[in-house]
Length: 310
Image (cartoon, rainbow, N blue to C red; front, side, top):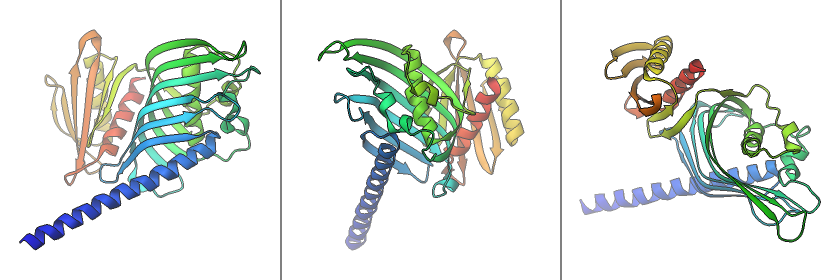
């Protein structure tokens, strides 16, 4: 019996080691690819890809200033979460059902020549000739925190302005990795009313739409997605029921409790809607198939609900 436990223990250690090594390799590939696309150094503290739950978790994403600018961080994203379609993971065009980016800080720098750091990025300079990395992102939840603007035109010490935000915006139908990066750079600049940037011209995002539903918070769990939106419980429930009925078969409904259960794409899907203060609604959608978590299906239902609410 001791030998059995010993063998199992060794096997578990080897499995953990393989998973860690795989994540390190993927982290290196992602870091190199993004650095090459933007033309600036990129660092990631940790990346975890869970094939079973179809999720990717990235912590400590940082993009630094390009060459010709003082050392500093251009983008700091403590957390990036993704729900992906497993069927497309190893295909040329990957499908991301849901992506959440916590953009804690963006550093805008204007050098002595009056040029902005964002305009010096390769993704901006070579936008027209650069080959696009095809992806499909159904929903992007971008949380914009703080923008720090440094102007070095008057001397070695910059004038500094800080803009504080706590702003969620939802976007749909992002077709390339380049457009995702441009969007993440442009939106904080627009919020801070930074003018005269070349990147704005590059940032004409074809087909990308902003959903007008005001999103307060978003959570991604092992088998669920949860969203708090600025919509009444009655309206959210009516739209959720209509969407679920169209996507699959309703198996149970309880209006007073705010629950809807259904079979969608062979998975058991459960929706829980709760009214909050200020006429907001929390929607939790979970999905499982043969006991396995299916957050990709849950994310697809959420996408349809938010799209219908616009």
